[in-house]
Image (spheres, rainbow, N blue to C red):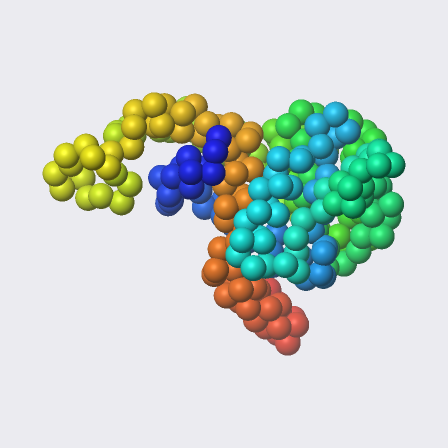
Length: 230
């Protein structure tokens, strides 16, 4: 899915559980990554999350957010890899509080992957995951996204070819209508693993995240002085 279709899909998903959850997930990545350069992405050695890392980097850079640009942690980077593609497992051993590890695993994660995640969690790093509902990975994650659980089977069946944002009572001459092939592609993509990553990457650079971070700090302050959850 290209960026244009992903942006259109995000707008069409406004108000749905899938749209809300991917946005909340992305905002949490921003809020809980407080150390400069503290956002890491990790996955199985045969399917490292290059795609999501690149999109997150593009969106954050485009928004002028340079302090949490993502780093792809690789299992065995070749000696001649460029600097941004040569970050190995030693980076995980240095991880700690104020940093976030985003794990992307479309298939059931191997024990070796889970062990690495567990080590990072024990150091105080916040663990996020996008996966298909693996219980072991969920037990290690502070926050998870499972696309298949967020999308009802009938979702998208009622979409029609009309301009996004146009009132349904307004006449439509077709000049700005969404092409039917685009809607078909969007319907096919809704429950897709790749689509969820696109939605997260688009939401991570939203302007209102700072306000959400301020509210989190206020809540934590209230909890500390009251001794009870706010």
